[in-house]
Length: 453
Image 1 (cartoon, one colour):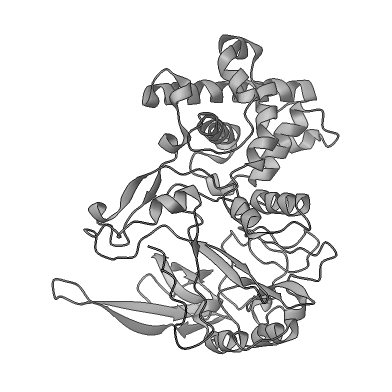
Image 2 (image 1 turned 180 degrees about the horizontal axis):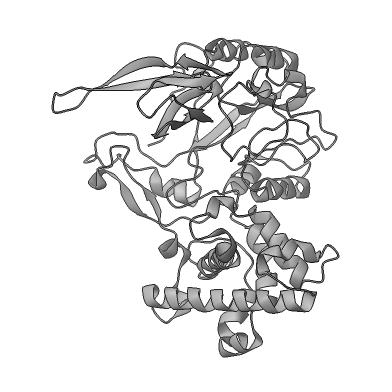
């Protein structure tokens, strides 16, 4: 929210037509040199002031700053025996942060969007709002029964991968930033293909699945769109791309080429219109992919108006001509970049060289981190590996009388960097090898089997 102060040094701000005083709170920051730093925070009706320029400021209003009773919600969840118990546990006691909560009993299954979310109408949450009065849509929260939820789906399956949980018809505003739905779509594909055959082995395979629907949808359009001259000059290269199965394997060269080509195309499409520093303002990735497919793959959804960013183009042929230039120039740029960095032989451009999977230490001490891990996956695959970020802890639980659970995580059993067990789980994590979770049903340990090393 934009806050208007009386002057550039004042702590009084305009609120409902009157000047009111911001609440001051002092925070003490301990420094290792022994000199404590005192920071004065200003709180307004529309949140904490995080930036000021002259008599204007920016304030952040977040429900997470409001007190909640989340601990009670989790305590109640631990005592739940049914789907109804699960719902009651969070309905009035879980506030923040917003989560997707999956619940199941022997008869029912559901996934709930839980948390206290302001009952806002359709707005652009990426834009600054007027903070000179309290907007009506922050005075109440979305009723629990109107939050996104999926109960006893006819397909007998529920799944989520941080994608947008509602359609454009949903009457409330949730957020402006969700993950693209590629991972969720791939989960749905595999579950449907294997309906009635769900097993621990299948779910291990799914968690390590590295197929990119993003690449599967987009690459055919890029290959059609690139100039015939460039394809002819790089025949072996494009034959290799055409035969790729869209799996983001660590030892393949195609994933890195596709990744760089896509990023270059996206930038070249919008940089003239939106500028070099406006990546957050670019259209959603799936929307851009659909535009390229509509232009080159004989889609029935082609609409001339959608290509406004190309300037004054008046026909599909002109759109294709402009896009071909952008796609071709982008390919030449990525080709030169990868040749310069990794050499002339494109078959040596391994994905694990281009997207390095690294595990820096939380203290940022380089010697304590690990930087030579070969791992597959991408941000658009179920195996969501972004290089420096992604899905780390993996867990599979088989419920019922024959309870069984598996897990793996990229770490070790020791916090001592000089201990061989400091990082002894890293390679297993990268290869998708799991450890059995020991679930103790009694206080005394009767299971004498060896704990995984």
